[in-house]
Amino acid sequence: KKIVYLYLEKRDLTEVTPSEWIQALIDKGASRKKGKLGEEKLMNILSKNKYSKAASIKDLLNSKMSFGQCSKSGPFSNKIIKEEFDLNFTKHNQNKSLDLIIKKDKDIFLLEAKHIHVSGGAQDKQIGELINLIGLKSDKYNVHIVAFLDGRYSNMLLESNPVNKKKNKPNTQHKNIIHYLKINPSNYWINTAGFKKLFT
Image (tube, rainbow, N blue to C red; front, top):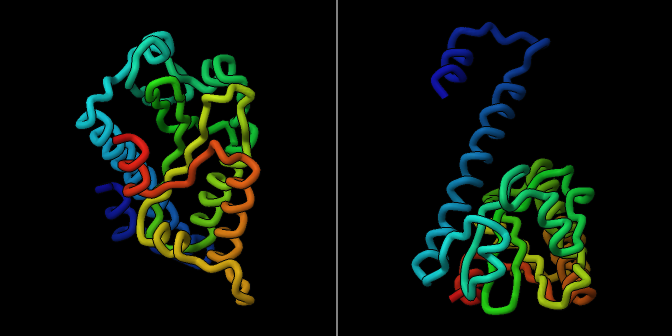
């Protein structure tokens, strides 16, 4: 963070290096930081409600209520999730890993979390990734895909009215969410309130 501010202060910005590039780098870092804080918030909610943190996929599957933090490698990697649940989500989200895997009784929830406060190009891309995710379906009946969107934009999106004739981004996104949830009724699109209702 210090380096970025020093760079902004000392660097002579020209038309070759517009200030928007630097702002984009700052925004990218902020987004990643928000994502980690969001994951921690969800794990805290689970822990407070007697979910244990699993050390492996075997531990998770043998427990009644537990969760694991997903990553590109490790006990809850893309490869392990794909093999265990017959679900190839990586081709739809540029090989990024999911955020959490949660076991509640006999059900498995594969969750991707985003935290968005305003709309824009990068944010639309992230919402598009969530919408694509709920378009997927595992052949296993007890596997659910959960798109978690939090922040001010989430509320606006949930309150959108795609029935009206006004064509705008939130209405189109809302319409796509409803479309995929009708195709895959065992999947979920939730915010923090929905997360608490689903897992407490």
